[in-house]
Image (cartoon, rainbow, N blue to C red; front, side, top):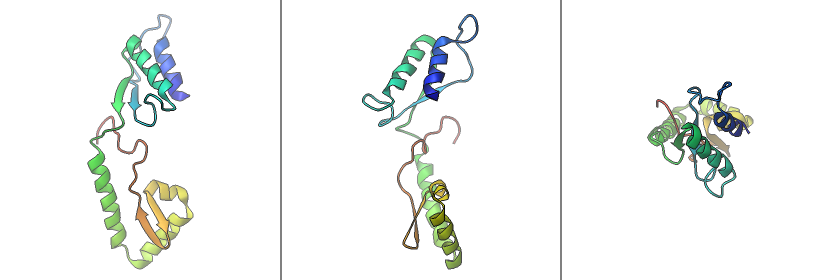
Length: 134
């Protein structure tokens, strides 16, 4: 709903003369399974294209590719190294915290199971896409 409202405002323009705003610079991320033809949010992609045709906004990002993938692999490998370096007492303490709090487990991308912590390997939506910087 927020994305739709932003795109509709972009189409409308700003002020009495309905001019194209220069800020904020919107970036519409396209991703298979999210807003490609046949996906649930394909209507938003079509609305973004309509806005681009009229206003030259938004800019587009390809959510299926990212230069960040190497950093994600590094992050996961480093997490596993840190887990391996923990003392038994530290490991158990971390395990208990992660096992008791799903939000912490999700944030750290760790899955507790039968006394062992596993570094999640699946890609999270938006995890590897950066529009500015590293």
